[in-house]
Image 1 (cartoon, rainbow, N blue to C red):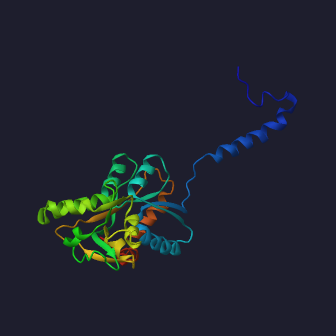
Image 2: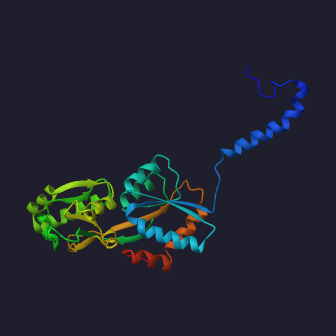
Image 3: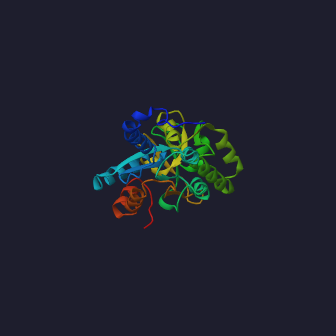
Length: 269
């Protein structure tokens, strides 16, 4: 038969130990209880949002100095996987709607709203060794970097090439694919290859291209291009719903939209 800790103490000493022991147990049990902290906010955001979100959070914390915001940046697919595996966050901003919708369908996210929209461009080193001046010069590159098909930028890139094949032909697209020397796990790594001179060209978001002074931008014709929509939503497991709601309201404000637009995003009022 199991005996309690109190029962193992001599009867004469139980009255002295009972109250302190119960107090200790109460304190220890509170150590493991989840606390709702209205002044602490965690945000998982796609790596392509790094510059914009760092500025957004800086201005947000100036307005609400009682709130401490912690940012985590990574590829959208990695952040989605972490949330699916139980990682704790209050908000998630994705670089595409597919990863967000998967979390919504799993009842892990609330209703998303569109944070901003951008499109794709080709980037080349400042010296432009392959002399790529237009999108249809892309097959002149000897080395091209793209995202893997599992990350948003990679999926968008595949869609651009599919659209281009209808006019420029399969031979052009196949030649471009043959020149791919690296497939990266997020758009910042794609851009870095061109910045370091390790590739003649890459396809990235316009917002990432304009944020770098080490690359040149080559536009993609609208008929071949795609719109990349960045959704944001609150997790269903948040313990800071008040702070998360306040941040969502903030990013819909004219000030926050202005910051996003300064980083190249198109916003919806």
